[in-house]
Length: 137
Image 1 (cartoon, helix red, strand yellow):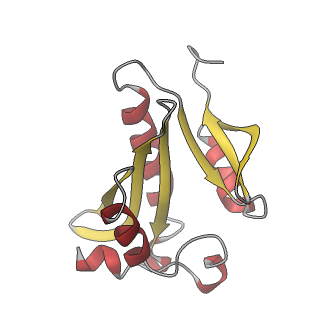
Image 2 (tube, one colour):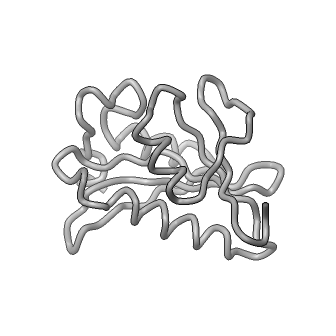
Image 3 (tube, rainbow, N blue to C red):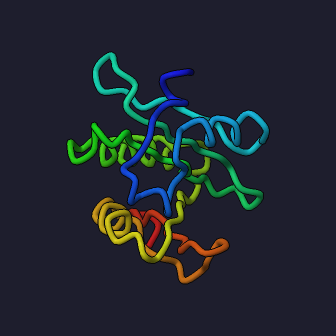
């Protein structure tokens, strides 16, 4: 757990994500909504991601943070792709959603390339995007 708590993004990303994985770990331990997962590259913890279920049954990806030293290696893409597929395949094939700040162009490009599209709704100051699959258009 300590390795996940110490994960930190690039300084310029801190306006979009937590400064350390510890914040997301704390959020998931104090909430019944979120479940934290460590992100590994081989045997090494390189990030954090969490998932949760909303009141409407939709499944959410949140709190993704990839350590600055591990970025641009496809870890974030693999994390979202793997978790989104797992969530979408759960009983009832629930909608899979996430949110990101409109100014976070890198996140928008990543999520769009993985099949997420903005719904037009906002959560606080973040755009909500939903995974569009062939069975859910």
